[in-house]
Amino acid sequence: MGIERRQLLKILSYAFGSGFILSQNELAGGQNPTQPASPAPPAKAAAKDESKGTKMEKVAGIGGLFFRAHDPKALGKWYAEHLGIILEPTSEGATPWQQEAGPTVFSPFPETTKYFGDPNKVWMVNFRVHDIDKMVAQLRTAGVEVKDPESYAGIGRFARLHDPEGNPIELWQPS
Image (cartoon, rainbow, N blue to C red; front, top):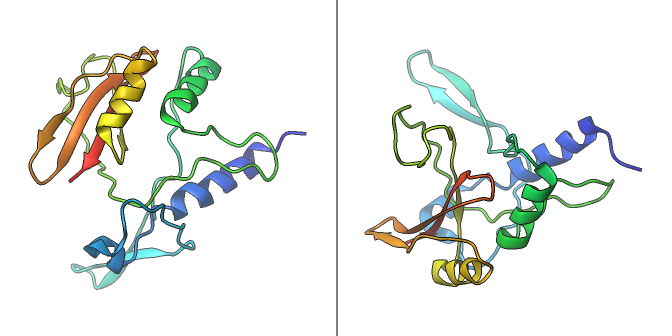
């Protein structure tokens, strides 16, 4: 018996959202990047709005990434097989993909950017990795075309690829 969509969204919102909450110690580098972070309990994020003296309610993290696909089942299988991303739970008690705590960049780009490649693609996902060379080798062994990694001082190393439907993916090994 499958679970109801509302239950699934509740599970996903808690599981993904709580994994993005970082304490000040973790932001200052107190977290060992090679160890998975345990999800923090849900917390209410607020920041003081200096102009009004009130606190602004802020989102606590990303609860999921949802996008259209020509063949969702095949594409989901590709992400699981090549990048280790477990798809949404399909039964009560199943666990969604858990990511490690770490930096997440949220950045709108100009409509005319060439950064994503195909101008018809309106988004790109960037995945953090521990060892970009191993990930690139693993993907290439599986027949996935991946551009050679590029280094940016103080930021890290990046490699580009596309999923089978042409969606741009960037791999990032932080400095």
